[in-house]
Amino acid sequence: MDTTLSDPLVDRLLDGRYAVHHRLARGGMASVYLATDTRLDRRVAVKVMHPGLADDPEFVARFNREARAAAGLNHPDVVSVYDQGTDDGHPFLVMEYVPGHTLRDVLRERGRLSPGEALAVMDHVLAALAAAHASGLVHRDVKPENVLVTPDARVKVADFGLARAAASVTMTSATGPLIGTAAYLAPEQVRDGTSDARSDVYAAGVTLFELLTGAPPFTGDSAVSVAYRHVNEDVPEPSSRVGGIPAELDALVLAATARDPFERPSDARALHQSLMAVRDRLGLHAGVPTISDITVAAPNDTLVVDRTQITTGAPPPPVTEGATGGRRRRRRWPYVVAFLALAVIGAAVAGWYLAVGRYTSAPNVIGMSKAAAIAKLDHAGLKARLLPGVYNDTIDKGLVAAEQPTAGHDLRKGGTVGIALSLGQDHVPDVRHKSVADATALLKQAQLTVAGTRSEYDATIHKGFVITSTPKPGLVVSPGTAVTLVVSEGPAPIQVPDVTKKPVDQATSILTALGLTVKTTKDFSDTVPANSVISSTPAAGATAHQGDVVTLVVSKGPQLYPVPDVRGMTVSDAIALLQSQGFQATVSQFPGGPGRVLSESPGAGSKQKRGTTIHLYAF
Image 1: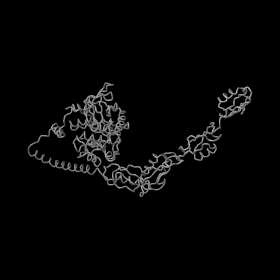
Image 2: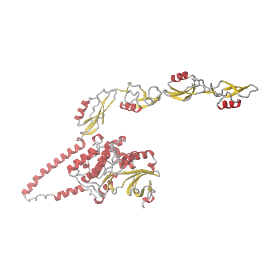
Image 3: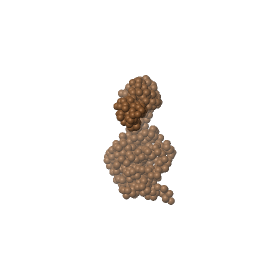
């Protein structure tokens, strides 16, 4: 039964653009579909994340970040990333459609590759990784499943967009998805989860081993057991599994898979250069194998080669019968015995060298001077690498306080031992007036830990910067001591006091004494005396901080208006005019008169506040 018939994504138009035809493959984290980009009318591969992972927002965010980074990688040996998006809760990645098979499919049918074919494949793989490393991108999951081989012998590396996002998922299971990855994990990825370009170099070395031998270097009952063999064992020489592999290829694999990342080529570009040099020196210029033109190799193909060499070589000289011929045959036996003895001795010496002779133990150099430690390591056939200094309570400053790996650890001759010189007794660095991030970095540099932060108000140190530390700066402490940072919250908050109706000079003195800055404006007031405070902004009771501005509105007293001249006007007209301009009026009338205003008080033209009563005298 076709499993794609029940797949809800088949025959669907993703994001209004990508018409999904059928499923190509299903993996641990996503399914890959063949689709058509209806906008550009081209075939594409769409990788759709499984629903369980799509529900994890952190995974989706990391997936999107890595996809954007991979989209900027443009190289003929890299599967191009065209687009990304989400459709109805399905995060997806749109990639170049590469017809063909994975390198894993090639290995399943072929068993293993010839040295020339293996180098031809790795030429493209390392070129792709070198381009990624040059742009700051690390693959983190190099393996045959992520290498595509087309029918016309093109090689492309895939899944740059999922590598980092998948790291947290693939490491969660002891069986499942990790099994495919565990066989290629670098020791540092297993020990502490760190990875860089040298981790890709290690995985590429393991892949080359598998191409040459037909199997990865380590197997086990579980992914965890395989992973930890990478931590505790050296990858063997490919020629120890399959005969006829040149020593130069053994050396190339061993260099790429050194357990110490500092002993490997620094990145894929460096390993690629070494591989090309070996390929040219050995004249191994075979083409890339494809499914269509490969045949299954016989398990004993090296024996077939040996027989071919025997039957096609010069025939042995004819044996002459008789006494002379018999003596010659008898004389040949001592040479054969001697040759076999030498071969046995040579094999024993070679076996001793491979098992024991090429290794040495790291000597103890703790407490020695730098020069003496380097000399002792050199005498043991090892090189010294200076590590950052460390604080130590018991070892004097300038002497070796730590070595990595530790004394007694077995290393290949010519390997590297890191040494760290003592910085003497540790002390708390002065982190005052520094940001929390800078203070934390200084404490870590001094091999101290940050126990946390405590906040305090401080009028002199900006908010977010360190006031002091506990223990105090300069105090001698042991390495690893926990230090608490006291961080400024800025000046303490101030409650604005009520200064309304107070004289402005008095109000200003009160506010400036609290550390506030005073600004003033003026306005008329019928209720507040002149030069007294009408209101403040912020208002009384509000919270302010030292240095904040408080604006005071100061009274200019009531606003005055001129009294209109109503003399000679009829009483009724005079009252109406006064009222229209905001004044009140009272009238004293002499009897018998015509009813006109004789005088007014306050007098015409004088300035009075609105509402003032003007007394009219009429006759």
